[in-house]
Length: 166
Image (cartoon, rainbow, N blue to C red; front, side, top):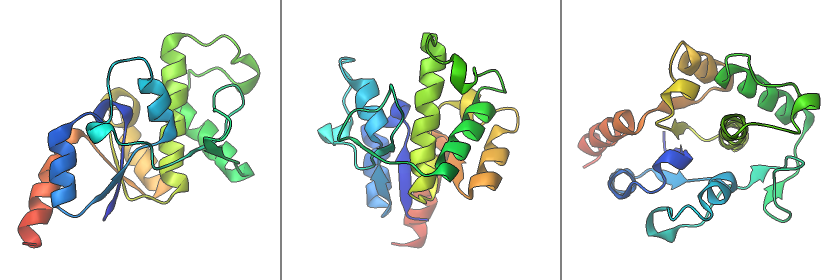
């Protein structure tokens, strides 16, 4: 496993990035993360720019900073939204007035879907509620053939990986 996508909640973790790079992982984040951080005062470690462009979503994506989606990606996006929201996310026709929490879930799904579209191997997030708890990790990992780790779990993996490759 060599490709890693960092969720927004970890892109400013200097130690995590340093350990991951030392272990030989290829670390990236998405254009959605860049938009989420805009104006927050938080920057990705080393002021790194997004390396992965999101799949375009009308009303959310910025012109020139996304790739066009395919039908299967739209289906995946809806499935991911359903999983991370425990089925409570409004259907597409009722999304004109999302709450802040729902908007975060929408962007979380966009980030994860970019990860799976790019066939990356490890998704690292501290959003346990959305991606880990209540069987979500197992469901998402099986359905999308990826690995989901928290920041602490990923650090442990990096240490093991370094031990086998030094």
